[in-house]
Image (cartoon, rainbow, N blue to C red):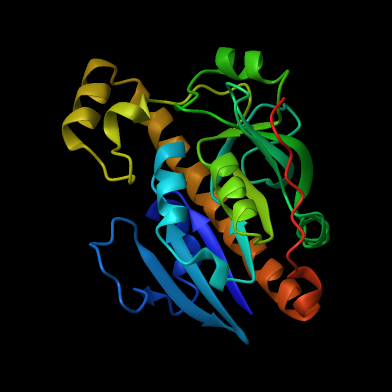
Length: 260
């Protein structure tokens, strides 16, 4: 089977990448300069392609349109997310039934068979993954959003919709990096570009103005690495389970929910 897995940035992908022989990949007859990084590896009998979409909905949609998505049997939209539910703690892996943007302009559903298999592989099911246009940084913001969903991220809805438009079964899977009652230690919009590259000037300014944030930043780094490891553990189990199920989980029927 040919499986597409998406992450926003390389830091999310790194723990899984280190376990398998991923190499940079370009499709044949590429006519334009590639904006988004692609990697491939054979994991067991399956060919796995990883697409790094960059952060945010615009990047995610553009990245998905830049590849021959229909050549894949299925897609896994993965990465890290913030919790909006006190029961979800850092390191937990969740699979979302649906994803929707905060402005309610777009909504899509995970493939039912892939969702069931994700739960059987150890993910906790949640009803809604909220896709935000910006980083949700404070516990106060999370509390307000908790009425609408269980986790918050920045790409999932756009990835699910792109897959649905090409009739590729897709599922939303995320590992929790920060708890619902937890503020992010810095404004990551100031210290990371859209592809997750560190802007050193922004980092120095953030911690220089508030040195007390340094231990919080280190703690968040530890949580994110642990979440990345949990996600890598899950993906190894999940890819194996998908391979064992074979074509039963690769079918053209996609359940997409139109925004109301």
